[in-house]
Length: 293
Image (cartoon, rainbow, N blue to C red):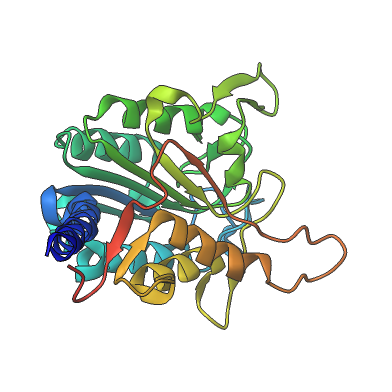
């Protein structure tokens, strides 16, 4: 009789631990416990980009699908899997809405609303290079017009949210991981940029490519590869253990599997491998699928 009692106690304790763990995982998902505030940026057409009708030499090429990439990430956040984030909690900045001043302003305004139990997200799709993102109004002759990684970090640092996510579908975006980089202007003095690796940052940073790689778009899917695979994964493709929660590790593993296996276009193609870093729990849910406890 004593053995049976001990077995029943063991089963009860084990069940409590199991369901308690599932509850805690679900509680980490900010769609249940807190609010989400996000700034979503997509820039395909640049102020100083290519415009055949102007007759002016372009400083950089316009892109095809970054605006569409931002929109599908926005749609994900609005969906149940993304937390059914209210539209008023998301700033969607497309093309000429995404000047440097406006991006920083919207990040400061929206992230300032967050509390410790909330989640803040910055998503960027557009041109990038070592140490910076290219905003709509970037002037390549003056790198102070770029959105430096350091400036993004400073806005994140000011907010109170414990869950802070940064996604970037941009070339060389993995340079954000480096301890120090120089953003070199075409003439003046270089500007030092520090990375997100400082302990106090408390961020999960998921970038589309390493510091020496390009982030590719594809006409057949009508999107950048990174964003398409990211959203597909968050909508369930990355749920490897079928528990109806997509963790940050599952999302990265799904991205890595699909991006690293892309065919190369030639000997100069260095491929595309995603980069993740920061201080985070690998089991932190970033998407909750229908029916998850």
